Image (cartoon, rainbow, N blue to C red):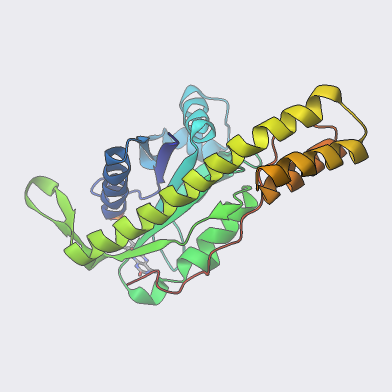
Length: 248
Ligand SMILES: Cc1cc2nc3c(=O)[nH]c(=O)nc-3n(C[C@H](O)[C@H](O)[C@H](O)COP(=O)(O)O)c2cc1C
């Protein structure tokens, strides 16, 4: 079962965004996923501001990202973009830190006018970090997240339904990725075991992939053989239509 990490980037100690991320994690745990939450505000600010990655807190945070199959990136809109706190953390991640992972952007804001923050601000950064499968993001308004007694929060029924839809799309994408990786594994074994010429490896890989009906595996295997690399290169997924329906 794929493991999930939520990374939330609000500096607020009573963050609505972190609550929404927790809600998504609760839904994911109910499906049997291992799911944890990294609130960037809990990391030492000196580490974040110094740009020096070589600290225990950042090793641990970076490792949590590396280990996760799926990442929920949660941020409030601040000044029409994601927060500087989130960016400080993302800047410290290694190159291609999100490669091979499925990513769900989750954004909260005070006004629907900044819905496009998901696709015009956040998505390019995720892509720059190597994420090749960013599912359609979810935008929630402040008014969707209701704070009750003792600081507890809950979503309105409508927001709950929309977030559940996003989580369902996210897990479906994770399942597809897992199935593709599993189907591609024997192909890669075949290619890397004999270290044949790239032409014969590509031919063999194509034959196996065709029998498994996994065309994507063939292209991954062919590129793996061409570079004589044993590293799995996950197939690039078709990006989802960006904004339509993300808000409501
Ligand atoms: C410094 C700051 C800037 C903000 N800028 C915007 C903005 O540009 N657009 C918007 O829709 N909401 C904006 N908001 C509202 C927050 O996005 C919104 O209240 C969000 O739910 C806060 O999430 P949090 O509780 O996790 O911090 C801003 C809030 C703050 C504190």
